[in-house]
Image 1: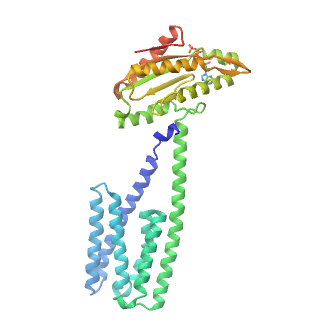
Image 2 (image 1 turned 60 degrees about the horizontal axis):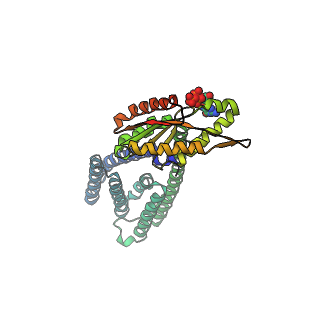
Image 3 (image 1 turned 90 degrees about the horizontal axis):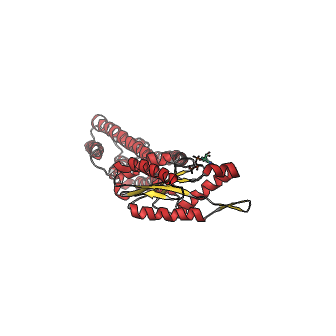
Length: 351
Ligand SMILES: Nc1nc2c(ncn2[C@@H]2O[C@H](COP(=O)(O)OP(=O)(O)OP(=O)(O)O)[C@@H](O)[C@H]2O)c(=O)[nH]1
């Protein structure tokens, strides 16, 4: 699995999308219920059944929206609201509302199902309501209202057109949401990846990793923190050229990555400097992993023009028991790495 996938969160775009849905839900709930209550009490004439039903539904939409501010189950509120809307739509068709104008007031509703449920589930919801309306309207015997057949066919055709237009709009809105999400994902990935070795970079450590460790410290601590630096790397560049230097960096990066666990973090934080993090690992195990890595680097030469080039690296190993120790552990590992250099390179200092 790509290292990034464990950390990538589409959280930011998903949160924006959820915020949009919530705002639409609240606006629709409060605005529609006010309109419904206005019609219930000012425009429903003498029809007391219409008055009562509209008042009940209007109050239901308000209570449902208010309650949703206090619990975490937003989806439940949306489903309840949609059930209320379906009842309202069918009741308007059945009763004719005030002076048989009910059908006109149904036409704005197809969009609500798409806004709440997306293009696919919204379409299913709309089709169900459409068939229920057809079943009602083509059975005049069960209706309280009386409609001319031309009125019914015009209404059903307009509902269908409204449904198709909303479907097109919602489908392409969703596609652009997916594209923007991927764009955001790729930009985040790019910003947190070292271009040469494809390892996580310093920005990743300072932002994303620390955020993850703050949220789930038990996943990380106690941790071993390692700084490793390739020895005499300048000589590699000077002797074989910058391209070979790059090749050597990629080689070491792959070697470190392939020989650490999936949960370990291997990052490139400077020119020829790598920061390794071994989560939930005590210092003694950390030291033995580093010894294995040190030997692997020494043994796995790279070849240039059929000539083997031996690389070695120096390691500074420290540990962080909690998040508060992390920065200090990094500094300590850096100091220890320089101690390893001073002591002759190709060795590990730590404890
Ligand atoms: N090819 C290549 N070289 C790099 C890159 N980043 C840094 N370097 C080189 O890495 C070298 C690091 O040299 P020094 O800091 O003197 O360290 P060193 O030669 O490894 O010596 P010690 O660390 O003391 O063993 C410099 O020559 C940098 O130009 C890179 O992305 N590609």
